[in-house]
Image 1: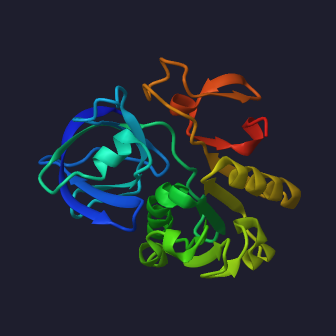
Image 2: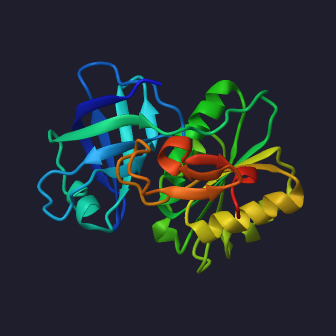
Length: 255
């Protein structure tokens, strides 16, 4: 898939809570084709502490409005600067990068999409593409509290939404792997979020004999497989997550 380096224009900035901001970006030309699970490398201007581009998951692609959505957690100098962007600002992005999630083979395939924290971001666009294919995914989204759950209304447009919170303020209390929906039958699981959560999901999928893909969040610098910053040990040796992933079937991972 061809990669582009584009100055995108900010057309929307929505602060979802104190930590997370949703950026909506567009271009005068049609945006490139992108797959769910891929990411972009963002150049952060006016941030002296930010020397390298920042990898951000593709949250959503609205083809009708020609908009790319990026869900940003403002936790470091670079992402805090991104959270201060305003409508009309420009954001230079290299996109799309990496590999995407595997689409269902038939409309009756049952897919469970599990996300935690900002790791829910790539699952929204994936859910949309599954819905367009004619299937209806189930989303299982986890967070510390109700205030940390993101884009629930958007997810509900494309499938059933199940929720866990650690404090029990919304949905079932506990972690995603404690949710009662796991008693249902699923053909495949896709997951993204904190590594301890994905490890638990991987263990569950292995015990249950369910195929599972995980989108890794290793630290990345170049996004092109040149700097070797994001290497992950796999059954095939050391692989760059930014190039060979970020989506991997867990059978390839030494988890």
